[in-house]
Length: 189
Image 1 (cartoon, rainbow, N blue to C red):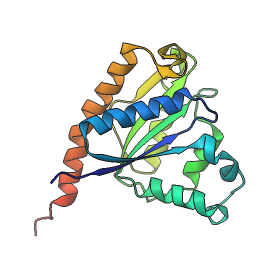
Image 2 (cartoon, rainbow, N blue to C red):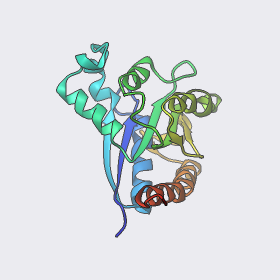
Image 3 (tube, helix red, strand yellow):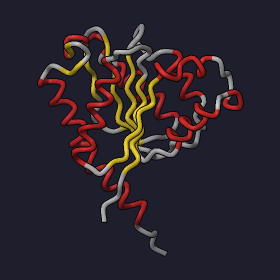
């Protein structure tokens, strides 16, 4: 019997339609084609108002608390952020400021970002990886960056981006399977 992975995607896009949300959905779809998953999407565009009014975890609404718990109990996270001024948005960071510091230890995280041009592609390695290193996650080896030219009407339109998504998932699947096997196996005495 194979494990069903609880995959939570966080889309950091602040509006709809959103290229970032399209990328997050494409990554979830590709993961779903490779593994049995139970997928959940958390959109910053939907929770931003309530998030911005909470300075501490004790101030969040019941709905936002539920979404934070979804993040904290995920088997796998897919995190996609738009790039603003060479980084993720402050609201995106604030969401993760409310996540308990030890809740994501060893959780695999597939990183993705969208931006206006290729010059922002390093945001994955220079901004997102350090953020998730703080949480002691296992950031997966291939991140996915997409520029505005990879989309048409907010939908993925280039074979290059499709190939990058497939590569990221293909490289992630053995790591995810190995991780769930090691968790399921009892430690030798």
